[in-house]
Length: 94
Image (cartoon, rainbow, N blue to C red; front, side):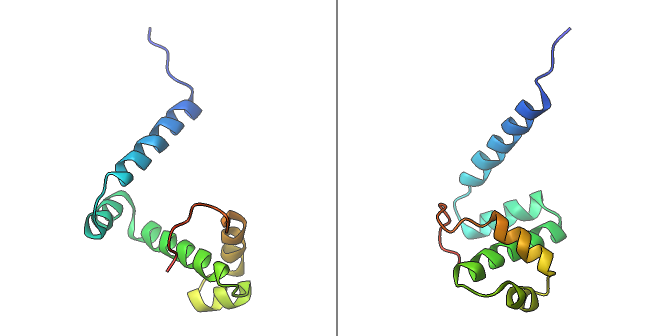
């Protein structure tokens, strides 16, 4: 009987496969198509908003103003702020 890899190992393999898949995309149109096929419309929208939260945080915009601007709850902005690392390898956030 074959043994299965631990779930955390499989999850890491899936994550690495996803990263490799996305890195192989070579144009904005192809990236849009790839993300559109991988994500539900709601997931795609939420990721876009998360990126905008990062952008506005990097510009020094207050949390409450970000929530109002993007039409999200303050808790969403707070979660985004915890995930945001201004010293990370984020490329252009515009």
